[in-house]
Length: 88
Image 1 (tube, rainbow, N blue to C red):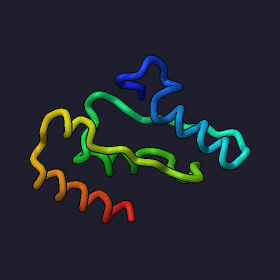
Image 2: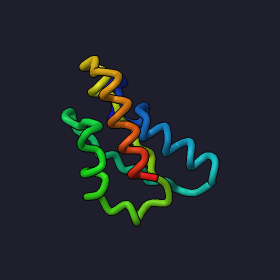
Image 3: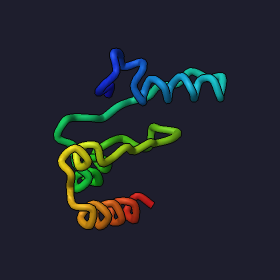
């Protein structure tokens, strides 16, 4: 997703793909699962619905919408702690 940049290649997924290819010398595919309504409270359910077994690595970026909405820090910490515990 490239909010605030002119192309998807300049966004986090494109940058990550180029950096990984540079480091490993191998081609890299980066899949992005995003939508404007993604929230931390739904992250686990959405991650569990994905075929995560097919990836060598997974990068999860959370909190954009909560930051834009100025969500409660207490609620954010509680939801993040629960999410990370389950992912671990």
